[in-house]
Image: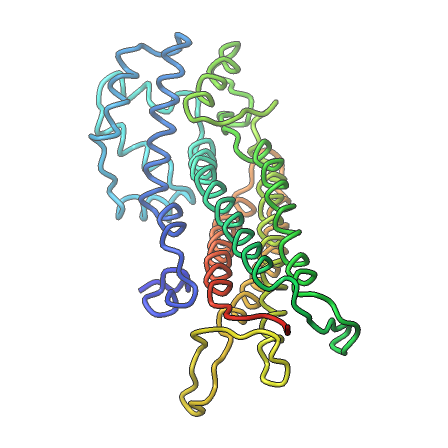
Length: 353
């Protein structure tokens, strides 16, 4: 039984996001790490660093290698990172010279970080599509109800009359900016990690940059001037962006929860949550959960910021902190977008004629 609410057998009924959970699963991580090793071998063979025959043998790991997850678990507990045991398993599956060519010039962080980035490429595409879907749902509501009247409230008090379109614009405009921000962030985030023991590719010499470029091309990623083992600003920037997205959805959820109050009647929602004690109630559950998730991601963002503090060329402590926090932030934001779409679909009417 998972203790994460995003794939818990009960709590996932509220927070679940199977699509993103799959991309953050152990199996997806292993597959991406294998893809890194295969792409690295192919890039090195292209650049004459290892034999083409070895690269072809390594390419066969895609179908030949079956991860021993119990072994990976034990190895992680021993080494603090999964890559040493995984490389040992893959070398055992290869044997001969190909086993010695596998992982040449790489370090554990190269494998783990690039696996993350490969999966983030899919994750950011999914999240971007979901943001656009929420924008589309908001535009539909604005077309239907935008001309109706609402009482604007400042500091929770009645202020002046506005239209429904005015309020919907306040929900949708930040989302358009978040999609634009994501395009800007992706150039810094979706980059290969290949630096070797201390980030200088000491085993490759003058071939280092050529191999890195060939590796990145095979994985569909960019490159950086220097490997980013201890430069975590792009990862933390992305986590901050997740906070912006979930926070904007939380603001929308808070507004809708208030608008749905019996005394207000500014919005009517279909399929509200029931009460075990008060059958007359229809609780705005989806709107409330958007607020909860926004606050969760915001709090987690402060923890992620601490992972910027990497000592010298590599940190075990700061790096491990990312593993605890970033996946949950991704899942919370992904779940928020799914819930927001469901919430907007449930709107029967907004405002007054």
